[in-house]
Image (cartoon, rainbow, N blue to C red):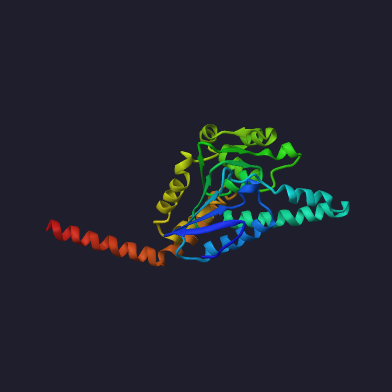
Length: 268
């Protein structure tokens, strides 16, 4: 397993856990962490033995968003470079978030503490979110005179609806786990001491089924709000044709037929 400085990547059977590891900065995402996360996500995507990923934070916070030092450096640049430097930084951030969102394996954010700004986006771009009772989430960009630039404008409305997403983004207010669960911003709540273990157990359950079928289903589901019914049918037909020839399908059919034959023999 690779070693990193700003993150920790571990595996337990089919489940990988990526822990943001800058607790002194509340796991704020700087350039070094972006590059390490991209490398780790590439490894997880390619490693066939890994079938699900949990993302969490070290220390008391999940992720406090963008790194303050990076903000200072951006603003201290020559006036004519601030815009292009910001665009480059956002391009790197979007590359990392896209790699996580489109990972062809189930992903679960285990939010152990504050998830604010970019940290909230990071959680929401996972397939599922489980939060500690001690967690809190906030689309806090507006409090810095900014808009959500880490996917929140895309992910949040799909979870809570357009009107509620507007309210959360326009206000930048803090959302506690109980409310987050009620409005669909997160999927489960866990005791702080059990959070990561519950997320890993959930990931292990999701990893039991055919990885090809899961990956193909995820790819289509992530596009389904933008596609017509006919387009979803078309993509589904192509994906099913791939599944028909997969070893997982062939093995499951063979096992089903064998069980059926044994039942018939037992009843005769």
